[in-house]
Image (cartoon, rainbow, N blue to C red; front, side):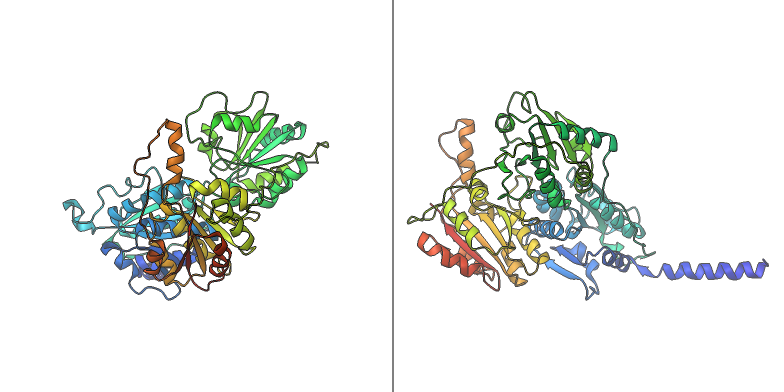
Length: 540
């Protein structure tokens, strides 16, 4: 090759590189988000975020939340319902701080989120400017899987790509990228999206050990966790339970439903107490926990974690959960492929079919509305394909008894125990599941942590129904006081809040009902409303 040819080729290569460098950081990020199917952005912007949205693309949608925890809650519900990471845009340190409660819940829910947080301009960071984040990458830890403030503006698109891949890898979770305000106009090379695995396959040797033990078992029992539904393994766990004639318990405080609750093999819900778990699992020689911790406890306990004479196996996509489990053999795997592998085995010898839980007694209406009657009525009236997003802790036992969930992706709640999640999450689920009625079943105390979510739902004209269970107090706390031998409640009453007025003021239809005779008509109308409707149910 002559020198002239070499020079000409170098000029062509240089020209190509120059063309690549004509893309702004903002354009490169928008191209990347489009490739990741992340064109819905949840946010509450501040000054350091505004340049991200200059020339906002027509094919993108910005969902405004009036408070940052509401923003993250909506994004969490949307991400779970779409099975893809959602993009959240927050304002520097103060916005991330406001959002931390629901970032913690997203971490516990194993929800994939990519959070972008604004930062002040690089040129003034040495002078500790107004509205900057001192240690932006440290602020959300340990409740993000990965966080980064890129060293150069040109590295922002690559950081967001990495944040997406990490968020989607099991166990899924939130990630954060802090972006200085003056980075968006800098020229950079666009990022070509890659295919990155988001499933884990089991160790074949350990899975064979588990399968053989399950086949030999005389009286096996399954425990269904949230990862069953997250991994799309609903049909597989039903087939596994039926093949082995195994009772199925819901894991303590699970954020999703992992097994049809009207199924003859469904045994009920494990409590978050060590001795009570042992009591319910006694008599089983093999315990197989699927996609749940072993176990989630709410109060201190003592004694063994499982009944004497039983063995425990655990399948989880979370290596840390596998490591801290106090007993049992842990298989690290995504749930669906592991269950499919177990189902490839030949059927075990015949076993007697155990009986699951009994249906609760029918509740007759009185004058006032009891929580069991509310749940029973809601179960009778709600559409067959409706989705329940719940945060009513004191009514949860009655909901579990009278409002069974029998479909995959039909129930969402928080796995963290933090309040303020379900109301905005219901909005995110409704945004994703168009055509299905979403029911936000929320306690009165819980609703006040994120009541601003009603505004977002009304502005987007989402056809959804909020049911506020109003008992005038933090009832779950009052019930919990007996654990600590407390007799007099302190700071747990909630008198004088008008939930219908709060809803009307944000653009929602609203009605209050307190008599059992009127409940059916009110709920029926609310479940058919073309827009967002709130029903405040005053319960006895």
